[in-house]
Image 1 (cartoon, rainbow, N blue to C red):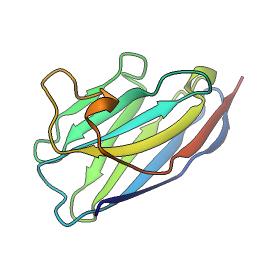
Image 2: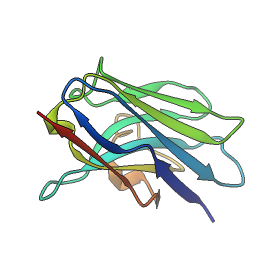
Image 3: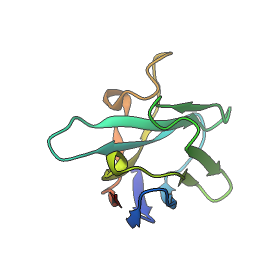
Amino acid sequence: QVQLVESGGGSVQAGGSLRLSCAVSRSTYSNVYVGWFRQAPGKEREGVAAVYTNSNTPYYADSVKGRFTISQDNAKDMLYLQMNSLKPEDTAMYYCATASSVSAGWELSHRYYDYWGQGTQVTVSS
């Protein structure tokens, strides 16, 4: 059984920063993809950032490149998302998720991810 618990969301003004955390409970935090996704009301869930636990190679959506940084602490089974220069369009519910396998080029596709956290709300005001 895999459990994921997000924390760190909140309300900030445009230009501000937040750091999201995700505690991943799984027997082996290795050989999986872990990622951050977001969903705004009325919009489809979109991939924000992801990383393969064994390689540490990050994948970012174009909309967050240069502003968001995904990182992990494998020893603690923790995943993080540092979000800087936040914009009102970043407002959404943010979720962390894991996937056992992902086709190359589809690392940010939510369809490959099978375990999800409950989400944490991020609200950016202008």
